[in-house]
Amino acid sequence: MGFNCGIVGLPNVGKSTLFNALTNSAKAAAANFPFCTIEPNVGVVEVPDERLQKIAEIVNPKRILPTTIEFVDIAGLVKGASKGEGLGNQFLGNIRSVDAIVHVVRCFEDPNIVHVDGNVNPIRDIETINMELIFKDIEAIDKRLQKISKQAKSGDKTAKKEVEILTKIKEIIENGERIYPYMEKFNESETDLIKELGFLTAKPILYITNVDEDGLSEDNEYVKKVRGLAEKEKAPVVKICAKIEAELSELDANEKEEFLKELGLKEPGLNSVIREGYNLLELITYFTAGEQEVRAWTIENETKAPQAAGKIHSDIERGFIRAEVVSYESLIKESSMQKCKEKGLVRLEGKEYVVRDGDIIYFRFNV
Image (cartoon, rainbow, N blue to C red; front, side, top):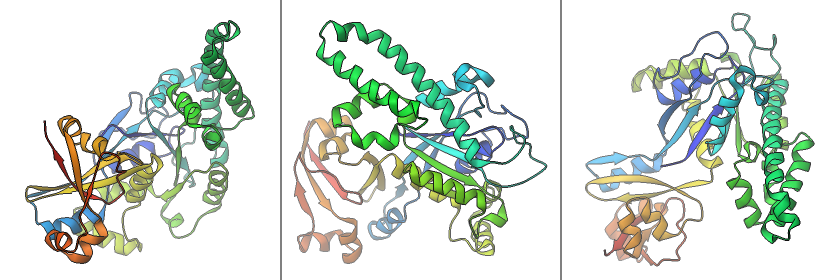
């Protein structure tokens, strides 16, 4: 798998409650005091995909295996974290290792749940977290510039180029902005360098607005403000009630369905969180289907067939000959793999084929 989202936010915004509901476990402690989470908790979550079940209904395999994504519950950050406040350096280090950031923002009033800053203000809360990430990136840039400036002055072209990129980035974040919204302005080699250096604000971000039960039907003023800010940052927003999601995670399938009906919901809000996290990382799903199993596989968008095969086993990538591919839509329409073959809907693709989301693939290989 190897793809993960780090869940961040101020203390007491509902991060650990969300994590427990996501992973359907009591792995992450949830309590009404700051720094309840110190070591990051890690949970592997199935990606909801109705296509998997529909393929299985046609193929009738012995087992069904969904694809997964990893969520990491990172301790609450506070103002001054970049300078070590609240064990901040440790927490920021944990964020550096994730592929994307899920930022939980409190958007509800409750006098019984303390707020680390005394009152609910989601924009201030987001800015607090973002500024700490920015301060840490500025520190990293300064250290890097100090290291390579001498090489650049001596005529090293690679070092010169890196100094140029770092200077551009520093200008962006010194204006109080994250790097990620500007990534499209850099070319491929520049983007690769930025990712390689692991800047915190260069990671894609998903905002989760945690509301109370009354806030699920219509956006409250807090949620509207978050959506406005997220739009400027080109970031998706998912609205959930972590308390309800926690209750749902403890019910069996029938009870869950009944509870969702009572709430007027089609599915748990966490399904949207998982899917958006998956999309945020620009991941797609392809399927393998046979008598033994129907299985979903996670790959990055624009992955070629041999590398997609390598997700199953390195030998298949090494000995790749060709891929037999049929689209999900074709299989569903024909209701049979045999009919797809008879109608010429199963394509033979070579090493340069770029796998598409929803492809059902059988790999031919020889080692």
